[in-house]
Image 1 (tube, rainbow, N blue to C red):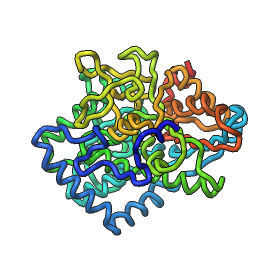
Image 2: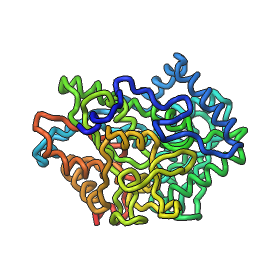
Image 3: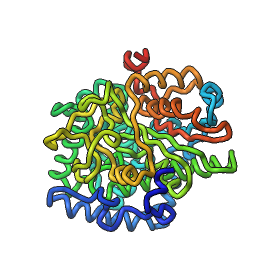
Image 4: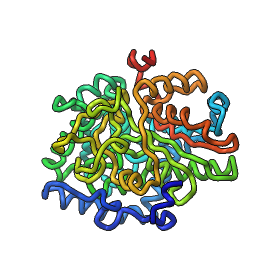
Length: 404
């Protein structure tokens, strides 16, 4: 286990530090107008996180509104066909709104209301975070504005209609590549302009401190549940965990409670058409450190330091950056990051659908593709947990459903 070669005490892992850094990564690189807002947010979050009433309400909503705990399902046919480890699927696709995103938006909505913020700003790529934002806004009587790249509004039109039905205003973004990066740019501009009365609800473990910490803590429920469920079924810890990584919230949510164990971890990025710059979204496995959207992390950039376009069949992975905690965990070797191509993900999408009768999100299909590659490297007595981060009904373009 190569991470053991590093001098990192994961049994006492307590990052980020007070300045929001995970080793060299993270921090807060923002305009001066946002510094007071981020300080206010951090103070509100730290106070809420240790408040029993906040935790009680958060837990109540996760259970009774979102439907947690989500099942840990033994994929017996898939396991048999792969001929190696036993494959378990952490069924985040069965949660309310169809993905893990609802965990974070419930937490942030409770925080926004504590802070007296009635207007929510958000961005979305695959539409699952936007849908979760629109959902909690409707429940709590908040006004939601969701920025979404024009390209993504076309690819994920079903989620756009759902967001609008729930009362959110969806604003298509026509700048740049018209995808997630550009939606985030517009959301940040809105926040800078309306910082006094608006709450920016980031959907992943990216952005300036305290967002990577805050979103991770709201998503740790995935790994905490999975750890308990696997122990009850197998009386052991899993040999490996596998999850897709864009910004990285579903993966860090699964991985974080296992960092101090001997479990191997695989983060799977969008390999796109090929690994030439501009044709993929493999930020951690192919990128280099730089600053994007308020923090230092691995990003995709050209030789002049300009942000490179990201490309993936999965809109939720179509982002040229990564979370700073993922960047740190890559450098110390605790998590192995790699990519699978669009073609491999599409094949996995079809394979799981026809093998287990479960249609995964195209983002999650990247994790399925990876476990199909590594399962035979493990013993039959080993267990591997794959985070099935979302369901695939949003992905029924002809390209995806045909598996081409």
